[in-house]
Structure formats: structure tokens, C-alpha cells
Image (cartoon, rainbow, N blue to C red; front, side):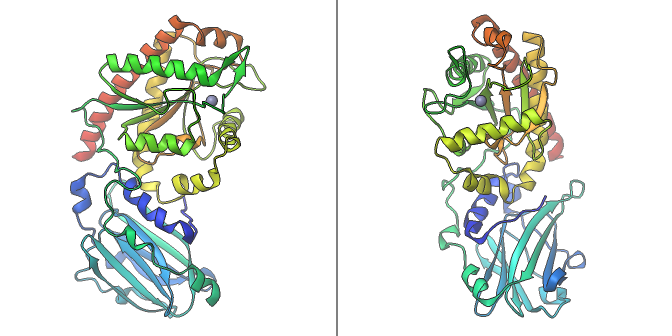
Length: 412
Ligand SMILES: [Zn+2]
């Protein structure tokens, strides 16, 4: 996956990246990454451009931007130990005149390339080798004109230096390891001016608020800590739901829905995880409609998508995505045990924006379809809902144990 970001978003990108290192412990963060010059290069890229490749002993938060007068590419890292490495020796193109690197202030180090002409960053991507744990940063630049370069080149806000812990996103919680209660954020879908699906006088927003409260009670009884993204009939933008989960230091995020489908006769519960490509057309339409509903309610998702989804999230996702998958599998199993029949394909994926927290395993449960009479009867039946609560609670307990064991394996 490529990460593309306009310069106007760079400040945010850097902030998010710090937040995105959820699975990494504080101890890991204080460690220095070391570059391997033999596997790194500064060379010519396609179309008159430049290709920078940096091989590091481990992933670290970073940001990339350009500065003018003279034209430079700057890469800041938190933190790379440049002692004993001469980045100038990596240059293999006349498009870069010189390179230097070193500590720039406590906790930050910087690599600067002096460019022969104006070049714009087109992609910046850090990937991690799952086996060796080593990281590779690839930055691609392409020629641009002087006016555009001058307009785009500026240092990120000084406020980014020495980020205080609380702003604007709370630091992620250390991955749960079974030694403390799991904190579950429940997200009753829709609300307020966005009622969600409506059939036969039943509103999805009301139904999911009620179910969210019942599930919260059940989970608290089972020993979990629970936070609701809304506990009333009011509108909560999608990005706010993600923020709430973050501020609450959620271990897990579960969005609750009971949508209606316009065609086909779908019944039964479905559990969704996030993916770029939906597992089927109905799922794609569903995710699309969720986002559109939020748009109609006055939220600009173009911005949100860019911020939450677009940038620098790959590394955190490599860990949280399989955790979310296992959680979704567990919920399917738990629901099957307690409520019986599920949707014919109970495990699906689609691009739901509300699932885009990079480092919190997030799933979306379509508890049933308001468009199906049978599901409507189940959803409005307290006894059926109690079974669903039992199934989800059981699933979370099972997942928490398995997930803690996985975390333990990773640490070794
Ligand atoms: Zn919904």
C-alpha cells in the first residue's frame, strides 16, 4: 500500500504517526533505530526524480517534507542513530548534491538532502519486514517547478516538536496482555439527525442505543470496562467515534448496527472488519451508505479519510488487522452458539470509515437487517437480544485470552 499525502496534511501525518505506534511499548520507543548503509541508497528515480531508500533496524515515527532556498528534502526521525553513518556516501545521482544527518534535538534526528533542483515528494512509505523486524523507508520525489516547490515547501509547525502526550490525540494504550480488564468501546450506530435504517416504525439508531446499553451491562457483569460513544439519541460524527475510542484508551472498538438492505433478502447477524476492497457488493454499498449518511449529516469525510485512513498507518495495521480478524471470528462463533442461525456469510469486510482506527482492533456488527421481518422480530425481542449479549461477551472473553497469548508470543 502506498501512502500519498498532500503537504497540507503533513503536520497531521506526523502527529498521527506517533499515535499509530500503539503496539510498540514505551521501551521500544526509546530505542534507537540504526541505518544499514549497505541496504540504503539515494539514487535517480523515474522521470528525472529521486528515490531514497533507508534500511533501519526497526520502524520509527518519521515525517518527510521539503524546504526551499536552497531546495532540500528533510526527513525527521524519532529516532535514528546516525553515528558512524555518512549519508553522503549513499548518493548515487547528481540530482542530490549533498546529504547530512544527525541529532536535531532530544528524541529527534534528521536527514537532509540538498537537491539540485525543485522536487516534490510523491510517496513516502515505511514498511516492516515481519520476520526480521527491520524497517524500510522509501521516499520518491519527482521534479516540479520552482513556484510550486516554493509554495509547498515549509517546515511543519514548530508545535510538533516535543509533542505533549495529550494533544490532540491521546496516546494509544499498551496492548492488552491479560493483566488488566479489557476496555471495550461500544458504538451504537447513527443517532440524532441520522436515524439509520427505518422499517415498520423501528429506527436503527434507537434499537442500537438500547442494545448498546444492554451489551454494556452484560460486558460489565463479565468483568469488562465499557465506554459508549453515545448514550442518548444524538448525532456523533464518525471521526468523533474514533476519537472517543482513542481518548478512552480502548482495547477494542465495536460498532453496532442493524441496517436495511434495498435488494436481496438478507437475514441474520454479520460481523465486519475493515478492508480496502469489500468482500461483496452488498457490503460495499453498506459501507458507502454509512459514509454517505454521515456526509448528509454535515461531516466532511474527504478530510477525515485523508487524516485517519490515508497516511502512515501501515505498520500499526499489520498488527491490529489480524487482531480484529480474530475478534470478528470469535464474535461469529459466540453469536452462533447463543443465537443460532446467522447470515449465510457471517464474516465480511468493507471500507467502513468508523473502523479506521489504526491501532485499536475494530469490528462492526450488523446484528440483523431491519429490512427482514424475521430479524426485526429478533431485534425487538429482549430475550433474543440477551442471547446476543451473551454470545458477544463470551466471544470477547475468549478473544482476550487468545490475544494476550499472542502478545506474549510477540514479545519473545
Ligand atoms: Zn447502520
